Length: 154
Length: 82
Image 1 (cartoon, each protein chain N blue to C red):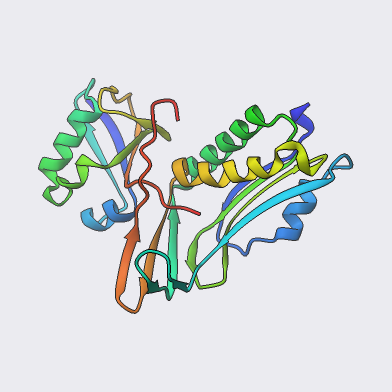
Image 2: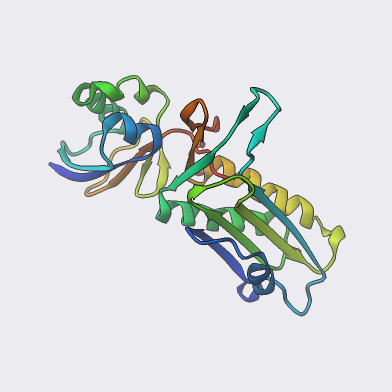
């Protein structure tokens, strides 16, 4: 069954095309899509307030795409109702307001757990997919480091 | 000997000043022993070896793992994508 369900995962330097991705994960049986997208925040007020001029993303691309596939597989294990999955991370130099990441899951209906599935997707991406960003602002530049230590088998 | 390729990303690459490196290591070297060797050969990375994430052939690997022949090993900080 899942063979017929589309799964898209990629690291790209190109603009993220939401409409194109959504079309690719919409089947005739699809009635709902939960979409998360993250963008570069120019002004941060939560925590240590600061301004961001741009973020520079890099990735270990072949491993990142393999781990995105793993995230999609985990979503399907937990939410069998999910139909299409798209996971895309943009890399390179990205300015405020620019979408940097997109996770979308489709299902027949909205009350199937599809929101949770998309939420799980972005959370897992931030744990195990090898992508890093350097933040550049008025005060200089700094690599942003996560805090998740993968466990054996992840 | 085992000929391996090392890849460096983010803070680790900045500190070591290169993206990749090929080197010969004794067969049956573990990840822990490789980290010790890197700390000696590249003193700039000694401190980083305490918290670095390491992969063998694109899967996360841990101290006790024995490095297979011709492995692709990557060293990087905890990820920060999104």
